[in-house]
Length: 404
Image 1: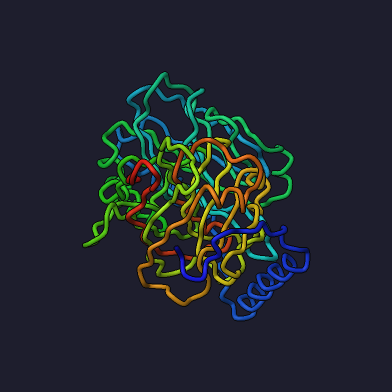
Image 2: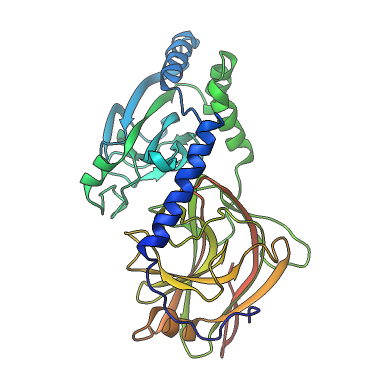
């Protein structure tokens, strides 16, 4: 059991208005100090991005491209934006994106292209890249390539149907500009030709690096589809640790899921080891603009998930529903550890997920546990979080079931 962690949990109220205003005030004050010190990020230069690609696309050797477009994605436009480019199976494409979506300018909260820019081919499933660039070979039935600026939306279906109110896009600001290149040559050859003509802010070098050194997803795990792929979690090797998974989050959000089917009986425990080196925020995490954290979670048969995390400052044992509007009904957070003490060291954890459901979520306890999750969010504060999870297992009367 975790040191100083209550054996039973009590649900906490949603943080009061004063607490939320306190977080907003701290963020606003930080932004003001950066402005006075002239350390504010000036933001992307979309005009320079446009000039660069208009120039290099004209200079590429004949026979390099099948098609190329520059597509604007205003943050206020709900999905989807058609590119006018039709793709068939086997077509090779690279996209480069610049810009951002401002969620709260006074608080300096914005989202960058690696998470924000999504794609869809015809009626196929939505997807995103893991960086501001992405290359792919089209598969399936093909169709027109469409692009989307995602947040503050959330997908309801894999075909790109929104599950949120399109009017939410009226509340944000900003724009992205996307260069779409359809290659007549192999992707790497096309990128090398493009790089020889100049590289805008390292985008081409970054895409070549992604293809050569992309991080490997841990075996058996998958990304939560409506948050998309990422490079946040990846396999690693650590002596003495079983099935270790590294986590490095910065300006992004990712959820990995591992399917299980375990009867939820009294005493069923989730066990794991973790070493957290850096927390992605120094603020309380129970408000929307400060909801950055790293955690491990169980998903129950009724769709609820209970997620255990290391807080920057909330007391151990704090329990609250997720502050994000689209997650409040399904996710509950438990503060397992808090503060800087113990960072950089390994800790073994064990939680009774049957008792914790009753104490943290309440109501009739479902019959089964269906998934284990790993979560990392640094989207709002754009901080950096570093951790390693290992030795994950569900332990009950039937024995120990390794996860991963």
